Each structure stands twice: as structure tokens, then as C-alpha cells.
Image (cartoon, rainbow, N blue to C red; front, side, top):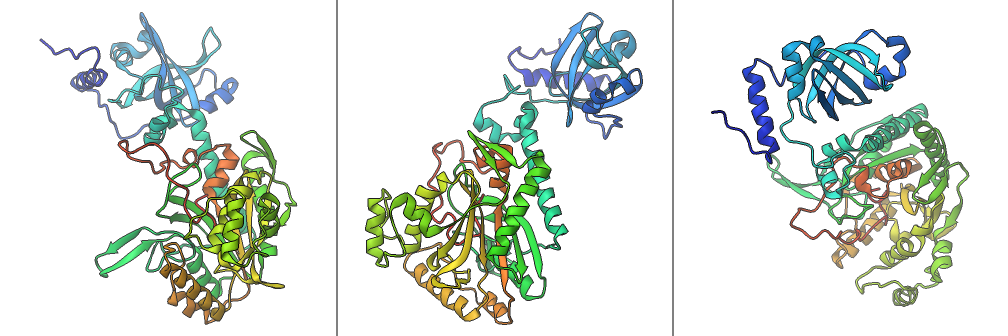
Length: 511
């Protein structure tokens, strides 16, 4: 007697179907299928295609109903869904038996005639049904509209199956990258690729991931920024370069931070931070217009207008307005700590002057910058790779752009004086020796390259993940990264602290 799997064991039931299909000579995992149309195309061109033979392919996602010698099921492909109408007299005994044995989740190909049912639903009246992949794992209960956040992120493929709006998020991401590339190439920028494995993790203030390279018997690091190698390109005569690539920072998780994130960095010779501000004001509205068809976007409860011009606010004024702390007037570090504490910050004794200023910005100013805003002219302590301000040697020509309460980008008039750059690196080394493990390491190879001469240059970093959060109206970075890093299931679910150097002399945090 044949073994009947328990009613509460759907996987075993599907395995039994798989064995039955193979015994009947059905190949459950064929090599390909010739599809003629997508579901959305059949709906859009129904009047033209009605009565014609079409072939569709996709996953069965529900509505599997058998009523005597006929039945219905819905098929979903990348464009949408279409109903399949299956009749025993059209499919024949073997074809209709296959139809009855199908499960939600199976991939099939269906060839037949486009028609409309009496209830008005566009359908394919199937004459030939082909199993393309038998699904052994049933979709989770209540899979349609799957809402379990842990399951959605850990098993993103289920999220993509269950929630069509999730696929739209990643279409927005793809179109955003295409729009940025098109915008920059049209302006004469050349796309390049620089090393991910680096001997010195420079260009940002962050803890790196380390790995060991056996062939060279040395430790290398996953890059924390794209900056220093792109500047080498400018030194070599490539006047407008950009790269869209992954950075890696060995730090905490949050709704705005993932240890692996995507950055755009670009450098333009003979430009300064004013030129780069103008570029950003032109680029982000153009990208939004191309991706969404508008420069007015919705983010949470806010309507944000990306159209220029954007206000330019000195960092000193922004912090002083929100906290009453004037870091320029408070040159004594202890006095700055006391003022920050009085404003409501809880500084640690080990914090550097730059760290205190950056935390005042992050806690009190950044969350309130909803409409596009440039904060400009940062203190030297926060920016060891930026050029000093022309009329203020204690500040640098740097801006960060904020939208939706998030830092989206960071830019400098790039420091191209090799002696000044060496002195800044040496100050960073001292900070590192005093316990700041996120301070810039000394990079002699970059200093050597800089001594060959780099023209005046403007540089920019844009956090792609955070930009997509804005355009897709998503409040968590995990919503816009296909496979975000997550804690193991045995660890506490609470997120860790924010990275300690969010935005302090990095092109941007993992936006």
C-alpha cells in the first residue's frame, strides 16, 4: 500500500506529488520555456490580442480552483498576474491531471488563447500546460501581504513574492542608479572602479573589516570609502571621475546604518565646494524627475520639494540656533564639553572636540532638516581631507546635504596641499594613539601621490541607500537593501548604538 503523507505535512505531500509526476514521465525541472508575452502586456493589449495564441510563464500564486472538468489559477510574472482557465477537454487527460496536481508556488508555462471570462477577467484559456519548477516548500501561512519583518528581511525572496510594492522599491533603486549614471556621463564624467581590498582603510573615520591575504602574507581591509583612490585618478589626469560601489564599516546597525552600503563618489578637477553644491542641486531633482516623474516627494508625513535653490546654512549657526552652543567661541575643550552637557548632550570624557561638535549636529540639528539643506563650513577637526576656508583657517570648505532628517551627502573643496595633508594625518595619528580607533591612519602612499600635484578639486559622496529611502518613501535602510545584515536569531532584537563617527569626515554615513 502506498504511503500517504500526514495531512499536516505539506512538504511531504509535495514530495509525493513530485514522485508521482516523475513516475508519469513529467520532467518537473525542465531547461527553459519560450514565453511570448508578459501578463501586463496581455492586459494592456487585450483588444489587439484577444483570440490569439499566447504563451505565459510564472509562479502560481493563488486562486487554484477545480470545479469538475474545469478550473482556474492565477499566474504571476515580473510584470503582474494573469488568470489561467483550464478545461479537461482542451488540455486532455494528462494535462488536466497535471493542473489538478499543481500547488501554489509552482512555476508553470501556459500556452493558449487570450480571452475574457463571463466575470470580465482577462484570462488565458490553456491548451498546453508545462511544469517549469515544482515548489517543495509551501509559501508561509498568510503569505499574501507577508508582514513578519524578520521573515521579510531574512527570506527576502518570500517578501518579493508576497508584496508587489517591495519589487517596486528595487525597481526605484535600479532606476535611481541608471539616472545618476546618465546624468554624470552626460556631464563628461568617467566611471571607474577602485580596489575594495586596501592595505590602509583611508578616506573616512570608521572601523574597518580586516581580512588576511595568504598569498602576500599580510592583512588587508575592506574599504571604508572610495576617496583616496579616486583622488589618485585626478592626480593622474582624469579630470571628472565617479564610482558607485560598496563600502564596509565595522560598526552598529540601525534604521539608517548597515555595515555594507552603497556610495556614489565623484571628483571634478578645477571645481570647489560651491560648484559641487550646484551639481547636487541639479542632479538630485533630475534623478527624482526621471525616476518618479516629479521633484516633489513624500517621505513619511512630509512633502519634500527637491527643486533648487537649497538654503546654505553655516554649521556654526545651525548648532548655535538649536543648542545655544557656539563652538567657535568655546576654544577650551572642557568649556565645550560643559556647554554641550548643559544643552542636553551626554558626552563621554574620551570624546574629542570634533566628536562633541558632530554629536551636537547629529542629535539636535540633523533630525530637523526635512527640506533639502546644505550645512556648510565645518571645523578643521571634523575634516582632515578638506581644504581650509579662504577667509577662516579654523574652518574648511565642506558641506553636507540633509533631506528628510538624514544626511544624504558630503562634499569638500579637496585638500591638495601635501604638507598640510601630512600635518592633518599626523594629528589623526595622535588622536588614534589617544584612543580614537576611528581616526584616519597615516597613508604614505597617498601622500606620495599627492606630492606629484593634484589640481584644485571638488569632491562629493552621496549615500545611495538613503537616497533610495527618500525616493521610495521607506523609513528603514533595510527596506531598500535586498539582503541587509541582521542579528542572528539568538541575539537580542534591539539595535546597537549608532556608529560613533556618523558623518565626521566621511563622504557620508552608510546612507
